[in-house]
Amino acid sequence: MYYKSIKILTVKRWIDVQDGDLTALRLISWLGTKKMDNKANEAILNNYISLFGLSESFEKIWKKKLELSRLRMKYLENFIDNRYLITDIEILEKELDDLISKQGEPSKMIDLIAELKNQGKDVKMTDTVYVVEKMIRINGK
Image (cartoon, rainbow, N blue to C red; front, side, top):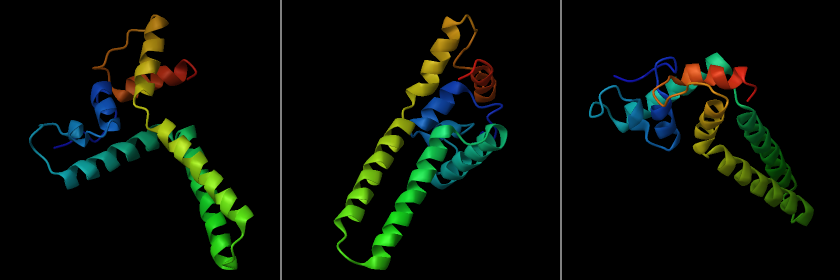
């Protein structure tokens, strides 16, 4: 028994999930397993993507990972100690780590909610992710 749609999942629970607490997706807190929690998280993320698409930051991370994979393949194909290539790989790894650490900041949704409230919008932590995300997009964020 899990939330399967962001149309009914509250912002409070969404933020908990983003903080790593997948049990927040359970409809009954004691009913579920880690494996089921992971499947529910995957279902919620797929639901989010089907409704709103991929975030800009996710696309940036994906492109960096692809670029890093290509450089590593190039390094393995040549199998020589190419210091320039190794340096490029190290730089990309650092850029990727930076992007991932920024992506993981759970306060982003909270900051956007605060900004909406400052604009006079009536936003609550009990509102659904879908409703708040729509507000955010309408307000150009």
